Length: 303
Image (cartoon, rainbow, N blue to C red; front, top):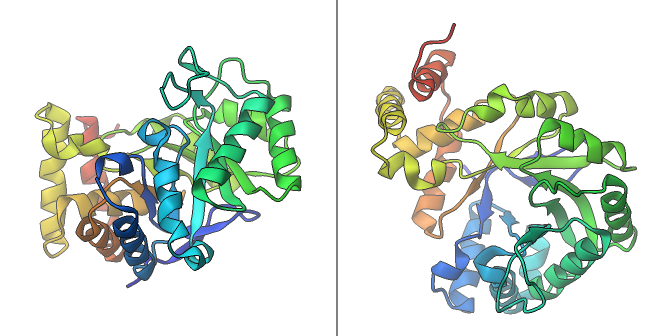
């Protein structure tokens, strides 16, 4: 079945249940035409949401994506663009940057959003996220920047990435509109968001979190550490019980089973892997199967 849609927040945008992440785009070696073909195949599968950040590919991925969209401008109307700002890298592509820092100041947010719009060749961003918590974040200043971008029609919705529940609440308290998501690292190898209040907050606010590295950044299949080995074995067992599902599909289905409505951000540029991820939407884990994987990851039975 095609990827269904999901509303991130009652007052937020509609996105696809799986998101295509482009942070490795610069490594794929695709021409603009080839990238456009990949985007169109994702759209045909129902995967309509594309996750960016200004820094991805040493500040090159947004421009590459924009070049692809420029070949078929009508495609923009079929997809949602998510991007992030707030990290400043030392880069030849940003010669004014002299130190690796976080910057959530008003001017930096506004300049970053304008640059993303220009590079993506878009009039509007669907969602803009603060990429990392900034120890010097002035929540009122961030709110001022967000409000200005919204009023100008340049960004429709806003969220955060890698924020603790307390950091999320601080910024949300300063805004006249809701934050629509918190994009955090969640996978069968990273259980912390289940325990630190992140997913509890998401359920309370009915604010679906996005999960980066939902397969552990590849560690799930390449690492020889005890946790990864235990989890691989558990995924294989559950996959057999589900009629031969692959471990990566089971790992995604495990996230999708959670009531917080976790939205996995895929990190592959191979359309066959995207199609395999889409097939994971049809898997239904029992509570027993879900906890078998949890126990394998935790390395101990539940209390």
